[in-house]
Every structure is written in C-alpha cells, then in structure tokens.
Image 1 (cartoon, helix red, strand yellow):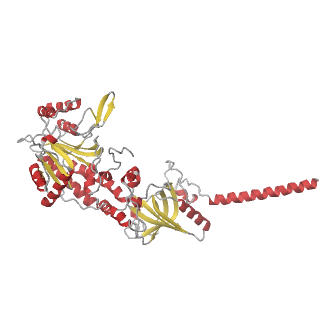
Image 2 (image 1 turned 90 degrees about the vertical axis):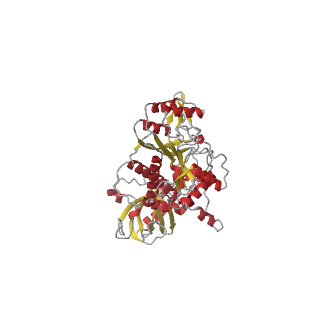
Image 3 (image 1 turned 120 degrees about the vertical axis):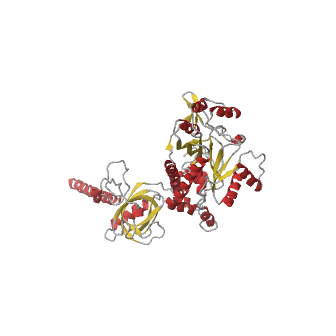
Amino acid sequence: KAAREARKAEKERKKLEKKAKKEAERAAAEAANRIDDVQYLSFDQQDGYAPMGDMVRTMSRSRTGRDFIDITDLGASDTAKYKPGSTVWARGRLHSIRVKGGSCFLVLRQDSFNTVQACFFKDKEDPEGSAKMIRYLKSLTVESVIDLEGVVAEASVKSCSVQDVELNVKRIHAVSKAGAMLPFLVEDAARSEEEVEASQDTDRPFPRLGQELRLDNRWMDLRAPANNAIMRIQSAICQLYRESLYSQGFVEIHTPKLIAGESESGAGVFTTDYFGTVACLAQSPQLYKQMAISSDLERVFEIGPVFRAEKSHTRRHLCEFTGLDLEMAINDHYLETLEVVHEVFKHIFTGLETRHAKELAIIREQYPSSAVTFTEEPCIVHWPEAMEILKGEGFDMGDEMGDLTGAMELALGATIKEKYGTDFFMLDKYPSEIRPFYTMPDPDDDRFSNSYDIFLRGQEICSGAQRCHDPDLVMEIIEKKDMEAGDGLKTYVESFRHGVSPHAGAGFGLERVVFLYLGLDNVRKASMFPRDPNRCTP
C-alpha cells in the first residue's frame, strides 16, 4: 500500500512539474512576444531600451538628450545638413503606413507640409526581433505622433516632399496614439473641389467633406496643408500690418473689451452681467482709440477681438472676429489716413507674395487664386462716380442715399478692376445717414460724410472716416440719430471737451482680409475656430 501511494505521489509530482514547465514556456514565449511600453530617459542609455513600443506618457521626467531634426534638413545634396549615412531622430505624425510580409513603408509628416518616407525590412540575422518590429508597426494608427530613429539612405520618392532620401528605421515609438476611427482622413480634407468633383464618375470617388463636419473637427481640418497654411498667412498679415505701422510711427494699444454701452450705432451687441449692471462685449475699439488721440498718443493701432451679435448667416460674416484697427491725428485732411492705409496694404500684399510664397503655393493648389493687383498710389473713387457706375450696370440706385448691397459691391469692383486695373480701392463720401454717429459730415453738404470703405476683390474689408472731434457736434448727431448717450458715450464725449486733435481712422476684419486675398468661398475657412449664430464650439 505504501509503495502504491508513493507511485501515485510521484506520478502527481511529474504531472505538476510538466504543467509548470509548460506554463513557464508559455510565459517565456509571451514575454518574448510582448511589446512593453518604453520609458526613454536618456540617449546615453538607449541601447538598454527596446527598439519598438509605445512611449511611456511624457511627463517631463528628464531631458533625454536626443536631437530631433527638421526633415527639411534631410537630403542627398552637398548642402543638406543630414546626408546619407547619418543617424537621426525625428518626431512627426504618421501620415500613412503599409505593412506587407517582412517589410514596411511609412510616411512621417511634420508641420503639415513636409513628408519623408521611412522603411523597415526583415533582418535575417534577427528574425524574432524583426517579427516583433513588424507586429508593432502593424499596431500603429494613422495621425499618431511618433518618434523615429533612422539612418538616412539615398532613394527616389516622388510622393514625399523629401524626394532624394529616406529613413531606414532603427527605433520607433508612439508618443501619442490616434484612435483607429477618425472623423475623416487628412488626405481627403486636402483635396481640391475640382479633384473631388472629377472623381465622382470613377470607380473610387473621393468623399466630399461638408463644412459642418470639418468645423466640428477643426483640429483635424487644420492638419490639411492648405488649411494649415491659411492660418500662417493670417499670422503673416498681422506681422506685416504691425511692421508697416511701427515704421510709420504708430503705437500698439490694448483697449477694453467689456464696455458700458454700445460702441457702434445700429450693430447688435452681446450683453453680460457686470456686478449687477449690464455691460457689453466691444463691437470695436472705436471709442477708446479716439480717446487715445485725446491722450496725446497721436498714432495708434490695435489687433484684438471684435464681437457682433448679428444673425447674419452669410459666407462673409462672423459673430467674433479679429479687428485690425488704426487711428491717427491728421493735420488737414482724411486723405492723410488713406495714404497710410494704402502703404500698409501695399506692404501686406508685397510681403505675402515675396516672403510667404511657399504657403501661398500650397493654398492655391487646393483653393485657386491669383495675386491681388493694386495701384502705386491710392485709388479713391468718390460716391457720385460709384453711383454712375452702378446705374450703368443696371442697378436702381433710388435717391442714391442707400448702402450698397453685396451684388452692387461686386459689380462696382469688377468695373473698377477693368477701369483702373486694381483689386484694391477706396470709396469715400458715403451718405451720413448710413454711417455711425462719430463720423465727420462733409463740409459742403452734410447729407454726405468724410467717410470711406475699402474694397478687396469687389467686397468691403474696411470702414473708416474722419471722426467728429467737436463734442457739441457729436452730441447733436447723437440726438439726430435718436441714440441714448449712456455713461460710456458721456466719458467719450468728455475726452473731447479737454481738447483733441482732428483725427481719422479705419478698422479691418482680419478673417475677411484673409478670405478675400486668398479667394476663398467662405470666411469660416479663414478663422481658426469660427463663431457664427449657429456655432459656439469647438
């Protein structure tokens, strides 16, 4: 009996031993195949890190000592910073990836515009490591942010912006993984309407992405090269605007956006509670830039937000936009201001075409347009001439005291382009009835005013005027327009009672300038995150 029990125990022991061995082998195989996250702390220690795997969340644990390159510095030419044979680290988005058998081709994208091909091939001397790398590469999702170490090698890659070299992958890590399901592909967002339309009768039509889908996922839409470049052109216009005004002796100011009353007459306002009283979001810096003139800041400008509570569902109106405003003391005539404005826009137009040709080329590939034409000296059209032109175009101008419709503006712009050879012109002497209360009347006929609008490609981008600096006349006009002179207007008028230089100014909508300069079909394309009556997110 004892012998039988011993044999039984031995049999059980061997069974458990065999099971444990199998479990150990399984665990070892699983460990060998598992792709763990990588905590990359130091370039000097990287030989101890796995060459693939998601990066542990970046939480500023250390400075790793890696030198990340700009892929535009790659190339096979003698002038390239990183030539064939160089080992480099690059960070970018995974633009595309294709894995087949023991090979992988992927495209890394930087700054929306620049791409380089990277590749991995199975290493016969390390089949297990190669298989693990291929498995990891298969797990990567398009639009993920990745770090890649590779060796620069000569190649011919016509589909990337870097065309004479590629990167042979040594290490690759996902820094931030994109979800497998995206609202749309960046390559679809980057196609021109002409390309999409031409594909509709083929076996594989390209998707047409609607405006709402794009705006709901605006961060994705802005990854498309042309849309990204539009934001850079917007930035460039602000820079060029500042450059020109600084060179002409202007000072940049920053005015309140919470005000006690309306800054315009007739435009809708957003109201908010201000510690028990009602305040408005500023419709413009108008009153404050005039008060700056009274403060002996004789030439001022501002770039800041403007709010309009108008239910305008058009392709050229927004409820919030960026205003480019200026105001200046004048010696004799508001033409002094128009000359300054003309110099500003000459600088902007010339600067865009010369200093930002790359961005413009990318935009015009998806959204075709040509460079704006303009005259060396200001092209100023007076109201009576405009009326004659529009009547000649078949418009009923009535008593000629009404504002221009969009169709009238376009027709006027087309005729001015044909007559004077310019896309950029100024129309002055508007009827006083359709201008704000702070506008100086015409000295010969107060039915008209010393005001002007400025047009680009047949659409208005700016309103301006000589301002009424006489406090008694301002109050007379306020009464005439049946306006209530609240606390905000009272302090504004009071600033004139202490003496103020004659002055004039103008205000532009940045997004509208971008939209018209680039010939876009909707101002929302020129706004990073547009606000209109139906949209307050994202």
